[in-house]
Amino acid sequence: MEEEDDEVMVKEGIMASQREIFSISGPIHLTSIDWNNSYHRTSVASCLVQAVYTLERDRQQNRIGLKSQANHWWEFFNFTLAETLIDDSDGSIYGAVFEYKHFFSYNYQNTPHLKPPPRHVIAFRGTILKRHSRSRDLRLDLRCIRDSLHDSTRFAHAVQVIQSAVAKTGNAAVWLAGHSLGAAVALLAGKIMTRSGFPLESYLFNPPFSSIPIEKLLKSEKLKHGVRFAGSLVKAGVAIAVKGRHHHKGLEDDSFMKLASWMPYLYVNPLDTICSEYIGYFKHRNKMFEIGAGKIERIATRNSLRSLLSGGGGGGGPSSDSCSEPLHLLPSAYMTINASRSPDFKRAHGIHQWWDPMFNGEYVLHQFNH
Image (cartoon, rainbow, N blue to C red; front, side, top):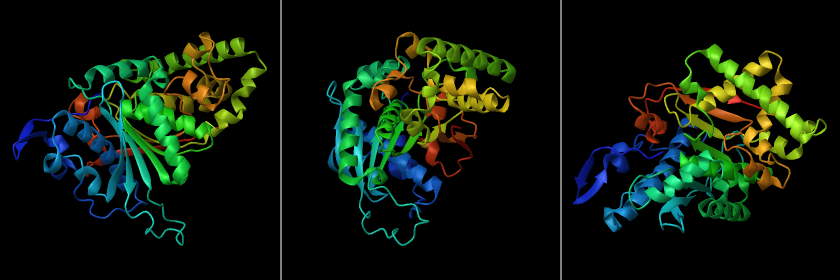
């Protein structure tokens, strides 16, 4: 889940990857941002995530002052660094709060068709496999697989920062953005905020899918559907048995309906094993409704075998619902699929693909049917 690293170059005596240098790898063609343009918004969000990667690499290589590379990634888009988020376990920078300089001068009150810019963007990086951050990041990657990210101090701190920003400025002015492990943090935090009544505009780049990647393992579409269909039947059956027949109507409960109305922007690459299963996950759900198995799928979507068999599966407050379920349980999303051929896994999983001016994407809206 690492940010990709290219050949290292020397600039003014400082070692920096080309990927970290904005003038080489950033979208320097975006000299004017149109906040109504989805490619522009995606580029800003992904560059601010890259800014967090570069902040941490600046720290690790002791690049300070004019030698630092991170500031170019936010200054180009007229943002300032409002807060740096530090992991108390290893002292690494895992996130940042950015503030848009021109938020109050942006005249969108009289033009309701215009999308406003964010006042704050809270961005989270993914794994960096360097010695100063590797151990902690890999432990958190394992937590993603085990659906226990919510138990980490990094995640608890991230939620506090998000809640504080929303309390100050309201949820409409705050964006979340994250890549890989950082997308997992943003996704889980976004679910908690949504269920608390504060949905946030969220940009989730290559988020991990905490289940078997059927999409990559099986080639036959028929076989994929068969495996997923069997899984849905089992989940729905166990949910009804565990929770009682009367309880499966709890699907319509307020907490789940709030989550179903949240529309995060989800960015996946079919050649990236870490996130590609989201493509099959949504495709399967549509297929179930097409063949008349919508009732089964509604129950299956809301539950995971792991949480059902361990006695979880919701029931507490809004945050306990979000934390006891699998990370990838996402009823609705605007999904962007990178249709360009990526030369290798590093590129397929990397953050840089999302602001590439030659980007070739497929855009699909997946809205949960009540």
